Image (cartoon, rainbow, N blue to C red; front, side, top):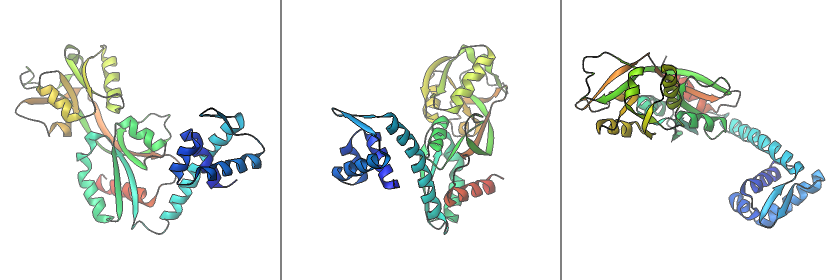
Length: 292
């Protein structure tokens, strides 16, 4: 059994089609069929059963498929490590960031590009929970996310910066002379909140529950500027990180720290125990320098 044969088998199972697998791998269908027959002959067992247009794994096929996924992942890591041994003059870094973090790291990105102009940054903007899963699955090398992360997640992390969460309301409210807003006061307002794949959604829902009320959610969104626009339109109130509030319309909106204090703590995460490319290591080093 070689890696190429294993890759063909795994792709057939993923695609549930010899034809689609052949197109994905840029080979002919007879080539894949021949390789899989050789694999079954070598292992002396049947791996796939065809029923009409559907493919079903036998028990042996399921075992080979699961082991194959792990072997191919290890092989990809080996290839990445060997390709990076020479230097960090060239490379690709797959980085995930939640939408609100983008502006906060613009200066860091500029510094990184000046230091490593040959490294291409491929940035995916997703909610904190989504970027964490993408790191765990190997789709991303690193991700900026909201801390803390769940103890059950096999992720290593590096804290970067922290800011308080603020309640954003129309300027027409009677909060002008206040210095903070207690979370219990939000029970009387329609709430504009993040989508469920955002870590801040989980944090806020837990805080509402601890304060003893069920929020009246009016709008969910993954875009901070849309939430702010809904506040300005009088739809409800939102809770945003203090740096994000500084970008808002000061003529029509006010924002005050949420009490008890809730921190928007941003950190960098990567899969614990996995190989980190030189590009990823360079990004971590730059983060340590930029946010000592």
